[in-house]
Structures are given as C-alpha cells and as structure tokens.
Length: 193
Image (cartoon, rainbow, N blue to C red; front, side):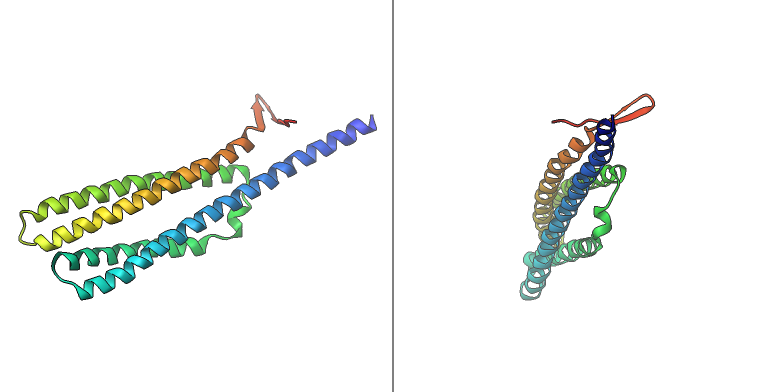
C-alpha cells in the first residue's frame, strides 16, 4: 500500500513538473523565433535606410522617389523591430499554460494580420503606378508605387514565413494541451507511455 501511495505522489508531482519543463522550453523557443524574426526585420530596415539614403541623394526623378520611400519604410521597419527585440526577456518564458496559449495566439494573429496589411500596401503601390500615368507628379507616383510593391512584397513574404513558422511551433503547445483532460468537475492529466 505504501508503494502505491508513493507512486501516486511521484506521478502527481512528476507529470506537472514534466509539463512545465516542456512549457518553459516551448516559450523559450517562441521567444527565440520572435527575436530572430525581429533581427531579420531590423536588418531589412537598416539595409533600406542605408540604400535609400544613398539612392535618394545620388539620383533624380522616379528613382529618387523610389529610394525616398524605401528610406521611409526602412525607418518604420527598424522602429518596429528594435523595441520588440529588446522587449523580449526571460519573463516571457516563464508563463502559465493559459498565458502561453494567449501569447501563441497573439503572435500567430499578428503575423496573419500583417500579411493582410502587406496586400494593402501592394495594392496602394499598383494604384500609385496607375495614377502616375495621368498625373503631373509622374515621377513621385511611379517611384513611390514601385517602392510600395517591393516593400509590400518583401514584407508579405516575411509575414507568411513567420506565420507558418509560428503555426508549426504552436503544434508543440497543442501537444502539451492534449495531455490535459477536463470533464465535469475534474481535471486530469494523460500520461502516454
């Protein structure tokens, strides 16, 4: 009888500890994925700032406006990436199961929403290109339109990759969730051997 009680106590404390280790590992991986994505976005922003500044000052007409808009986009991308990168810390790794589910949902929805915005940017670029055909500010509209297509396309690719990466990573969380069963007024853990 004592061995059954000891086994029950070990099981009672070991399973939650095992799940917590997996949960903490999951959150660490999610933070690392976000950190890497912000490095990519920040690098893209930095490259656009440098090339845009050089291109704007050394060219004219449509090309000047293309580089000017790239400079603006680079500044915005860097302004998003840098604070996000530096805000990621150890607190975001020590989350409860409910907090982990919430954070996973937020990151997935954020990249999906951003992909939708990227399509809006690209559509705006097409509009600018078309408007440039009939407007006295031909160079401005054409340059800005081409930049919006390039930036929107690059960000769309980035956001889709990050969305799919986070969806794939989120499957690990659902594996942890599948070990919890709720029925009526009881909660149980499933231990698969």
